[in-house]
Image 1 (cartoon, rainbow, N blue to C red):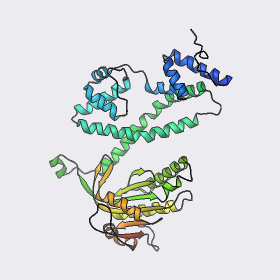
Image 2 (image 1 turned 30 degrees about the horizontal axis):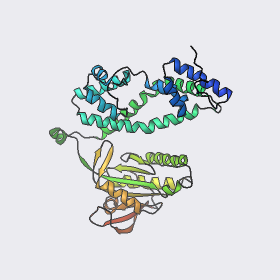
Image 3 (image 1 turned 135 degrees about the vertical axis):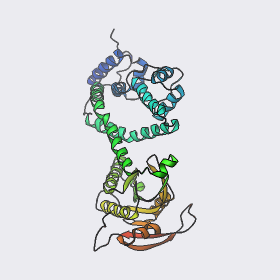
Image 4 (image 1 turned 90 degrees about the vertical axis):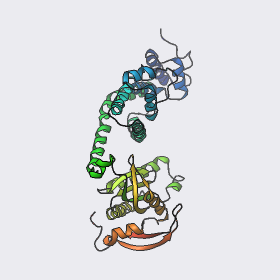
Length: 374
């Protein structure tokens, strides 16, 4: 029996064309089993057009936590911790909220447990994976959302178009993260060494002596008062792209942090060279503010793809002392890079939580010979 959506108060304030489109979408969602309370809530939140794609991505929840754990062959407490690590909401009691995809994911992680991998480490990887997917998901949402949104669309037209895109494109996108993960793991394995000491101890190397570089855009925060958030995001993305371009092995791009990027290398000279190239590239870009950079060397530890230790902290603080368009390095970096660059003293400085004064030097390419070969 057809529902009078007008009488339900769900078509108020709409033009004739918008009323027709909403009514058609409401009919469809109602026939799919969406409750009227959920429909009203979606209208109040101005997200009715997104319900079809949300349902397409979520699938059909079928199992309580106990049922899902039993089917996945894992303990229920572990299933709930895994769901939380991956960003799923915490179920209330025996709420039916797990679908086949959730069960299969838990079953896969369960196989890692049975293979002898520690539970806490697996949960930490799940959290990292979930966090890493946030910018990827946001990028896909923005790309697809803006590409498929047309001026004058009704809610029904938007809803159907987004739903079709999710059903058709998601199967194509799903293999890509696995492919990229394979590439990254392959490159990391190529750099690892498993020798006599590692086999005897049962552990991969802990701390490594590395050189760390931070580079950030000068005055980025104050720019927010003059340009849009979208423009700031575009600048940050441009810096990230340039940072990745100069990170030629043995230099590695570690991460971007808003208006800054972090690079690392096992030796100082290649990293000084890459950082100078990055500063030059930003200076040559008329749409970006100046870049400043700081480098420090020492022992650091790699934890889940990020780096921790004294050189990381010092490089970050040295960056804050650098002038726009310059690269400052500690004495250790300058001594290791030696004759590969031109240098000028930049004084000795005290830094928070560092016991002794640190001697800094400004790095430049040799004018006569240009950049050294890494």
